[in-house]
Amino acid sequence: MGAQASSARYIRGVLDHLETGLPVIGFVGDEIFSGAVPYLGDIDDFVDVLRHYPVDGVVVTLPLSDERTETVIRSCELLGMPVELLLDSLGNRPANSQIVHSMGVARMVVSQVPHSPIGILWKRMTDVVFSVAILILLCPALVLIALAVKLDDGGPIIFSQLRSGIHGKTFRMYKFRSMRAEQRRCVLN
Image 1 (tube, rainbow, N blue to C red):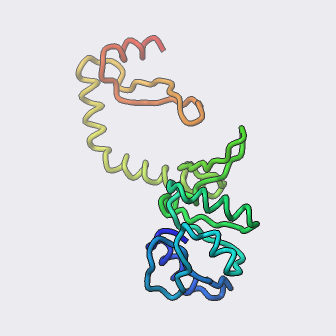
Image 2: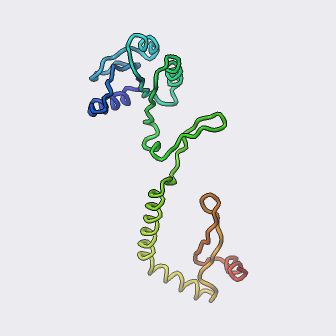
């Protein structure tokens, strides 16, 4: 039930994969669309449609922000009907997410940090490979910058500093010294 384009995409997916054994009884929505399943009624008539047609579950394709989504979910709960929500507006983000229940509130946490050991290893490998490749490409420019810094005043070429990274973990950052304050700081370290 719900948004026409999302509903049509879902229905096509089910019909293209009949091996799942998911029969689609029909479509409930604001508009009738020509599809492979019958139109059962308007969203406002949703409860009557559920009482008239024997279904095992409901797929909601309305946007999560649509106020009717909560009404449909509540109606399904009262009738003991399982509900699936399409997350079209979130794209593929749910693949990198988890549902968290705490403080009496359920929420989906979308993270760009890989959680599996293989994901972490893959990220580390790609970081190292790309960093080495970029350093090789930039090597001539880096040598020229180092010479310019050294010839400017004869002080140290590299400046280092502790920085805070992910989860507050500190790491040592290195860069070319470019300011007098960095030179004084470098001597004090």
